[in-house]
Structures are given as C-alpha cells and as structure tokens.
Image 1 (cartoon, rainbow, N blue to C red):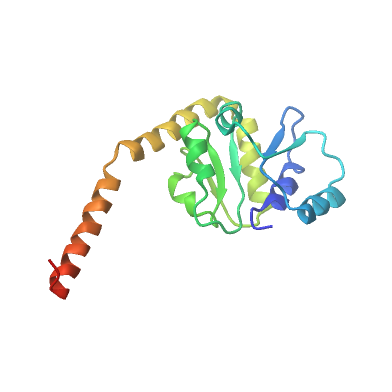
Image 2 (tube, helix red, strand yellow; image 1 turned 90 degrees about the vertical axis):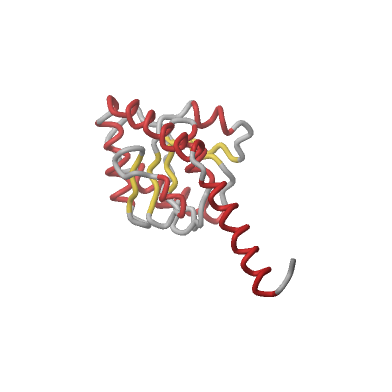
Length: 172
C-alpha cells in the first residue's frame, strides 16, 4: 500500500494514449493486487512482472521510471533509474526525491495524487522529443554525485567527531 501502486494504476487509467505500456516490477501484496483487479479489471497495457532478475536491463529498456511512494525513506530505485538515464516521476513522500530536480531530470508530485501523476505521465507522452534531454540530465545528475567528494567529507566529519569525543573522555 505504501508504494502508491493504486494511485499509479488510477493515473494510468486516466491517460489518453494507446501507445503506452505500464510495466510494474517487484512483488505485489496479494490484497493490493486483488484491490487493483476488482477496481480496474481490464489491464491491456499493464504488465506485472514480479521480481525483476535483471534490473539493469529492465531499466535500460524503459523510457521513464515512476516511484509513486506514499512514504519511503530512500528507495534505491530512484538512483538506479537516474544512473540508467531514466527520468523519474516520484512523490513528496519519497526520500530519494532529493535526487530529482523538478522539470530537469524528472518530476516530483504530491503524495496520493493520481491526477498529478497522470498529468506528468501525459507530459512525457506529449513531449517525447524532450525525453532524451531529460535522460541525459538524469545520468548527469548521478554522475555529479558519483564524482563528488561527499563520502570523503562525511568520513572526515565522523572522524572529527570521534576525535572530539576521545578528547572529551580522555581516551587516546
């Protein structure tokens, strides 16, 4: 429920396009699946893959990644998608939203808002010529993080805190 899948399915059903397919990777709680099947019995352009064995291939054969989480501290999916050059649509409830520059490498929408999700999904359909640019920016955004020295700065900060605590406690 917290992954926001119901809102994604609802948004997908609002889209006005026949050449769009929604491919959902990952396991789905049976209650959620039953709810979706009851509410949206026709899934012509929706595929439920289950566990994805080759995530790299799955992402690299997609055009856009959608992470509609209601609450998720920091799913790796967003970073993985950006690394593979996918623009990402995610929500305010996704901790990894900090990786998204809204309108540059993806979009951030309100939580549990199928209208906003549908609007951004429709944007990608209507602006297919902009997907390549957003894809490049997606890859660049992760490359900047990879080439930054944030991990070194964090490690040095932790060591400084440890040194300070040692001094305060009189430990060598």
